Image (tube, rainbow, N blue to C red):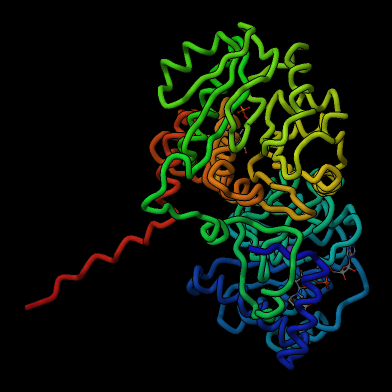
Length: 514
Ligand SMILES: NC(=O)C1=CN([C@@H]2O[C@H](COP(=O)(O)OP(=O)(O)OC[C@H]3O[C@@H](n4cnc5c(N)ncnc54)[C@H](O)[C@@H]3O)[C@@H](O)[C@H]2O)[C@@H](O)CC1
Ligand SMILES: Nc1ncnc2c1ncn2[C@@H]1O[C@H](COP(=O)(O)OP(=O)(O)O)[C@@H](O)[C@H]1O
Ligand SMILES: [K+]
């Protein structure tokens, strides 16, 4: 699914109004109506107090349309205008008048703290204060209103985006954003919903279709995409009846050090479980026995050194190399890596201490083959690109870094994000059960295994992070968040693959009367 920028959202609105020959008030009516339908379906006329807080722009206008429909359908509604500016939008004013014509209960203005109405935890708050038009810091008294909402502990539903959340930067102050329980976002979600710094303001969201021009939606290229099943399914490669292990490539995992051979085992297992034909592990000598005994499907090559990788020489011809898991940052290993990178031309996935070694010797970056995949977690990323101001800045810096070296950077996290050719691909699967040692090694193995089978760097990364997260989502149903361990993610990869083609369960047949 595409994530549109603020400018693209405004352009979509403009174009829709033109092509469908409607007014902007008509489009706002659709938006407000879609909010009403959503609420009405759930409330079914219940007399719960609904407090609609409107700003003075078009987000506020949406709130006014919703309030009017709630009133005409007999709901218990109170409307407030949060008067943070005198510059009302045309469509706000139009709907303000329409609401006043509909009810004697005119909207009440709020100018400062003394006007805050009583709110109980039995009420519903509709937050239609700021939408995507927020472009400067929110006034203190309005922030206090947001905090007042939070203290009330009422169910809070935000229109389009939680008020206070910018579309292109993080709020400077903690609490300067409405803490909403549900966001009803027009047409598509916003990028801020998926970033670690701003996602704390997001509990649940749903995109409401307001009939933005389909052609525009389809043909407009966006910077960000959120990856769901429908996005990765077309990437899936079917198997030919006459295929053989050579068809699916040979993955080589180079890594491990004394005490960290398990990382190589996890990654190598994942290479095969993702579907590669063959896997070889390249480890210090101490890794030979554990790998050969615990993982008979793998071939093993050992370094001359017992505890660390000290030279990278092999006579096989792997399709792809996954390098770095458990490798450590020993001086010998750093030298070995440097010598290897200066001559290697095989496609690469770089992870963990492989990345840390490169961070200390950034001259090596120019030796990475084009489309090398780097899979840092945020700390490893910081060592590579330096500190950032907020998530938006982090993404810009990562885009520039990936472009400079013609590589792909997968930033791991709750929503892992692949950064490639100035585009962002945000994963939608995975859960906090993955916050356990070794799951990153499994991801490296999965991506290496997909590259081995001929998936492109972008496909292997997008499909790989989707499968990895999906596997954890399926595993958690039996393992629970606490007990899920990295090996489970490998085991459940099978289910993640099968789930791609799972049909919804058929509705049970009703017995018919004779
Ligand atoms: N025709 C359209 O353009 C549609 C717009 N829609 C709604 O319109 C929203 C965007 O509306 P607007 O562009 O009017 O903007 P908002 O309603 O988000 O913001 C209100 C106004 O406040 C001003 N402002 C921004 N930050 C401020 C601050 N910190 N303190 C004081 N004033 C500030 C801005 O100049 C802006 O015009 C969307 O989020 C969506 O809810 C929907 O009605 C769908 C159709
Ligand atoms: N809360 C979370 N929700 C979803 N995925 C997560 C969460 N925490 C961690 N992950 C995923 O788990 C993996 C952890 O990788 P990493 O930090 O490299 O761990 P390790 O080095 O122990 O293998 C990444 O794929 C990351 O996206
Ligand atoms: K809002």
